[in-house]
Image 1 (cartoon, rainbow, N blue to C red):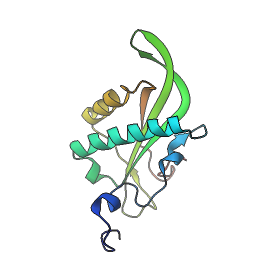
Image 2: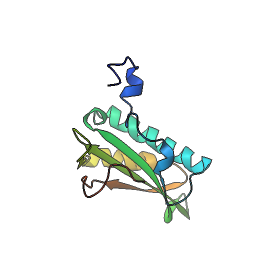
Image 3: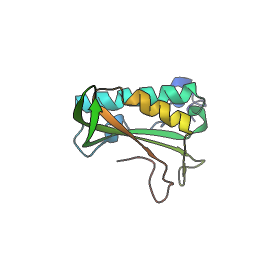
Image 4: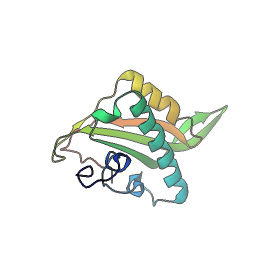
Length: 139
């Protein structure tokens, strides 16, 4: 539809289109500017990885969410309590039902390695649940 009304590809190929803002992807706490910066950063990194590896064009929607339940991790020589990032991708033709995407081990490792370099992120979770029973978004 976006192409048929003359929108630029960078707009109508963005996932989701038109979709919700990233604030619904801050789970378990009110969104703050800091949390929105973290989820935007993670979303950009993961989207970049998926585009580079050729996976992005094969999925219908990518959801990157910030889980605000802090969990223990190691940064440098010390323990910290940081956030987790949840990565969810689905394939669908109609969004009434969808299959959770299972990334290859190489893509999972690259995502985990890059995303946990953020000083406030200590874990990455991959949600491969089909719709139903899950919905596409995390809200």
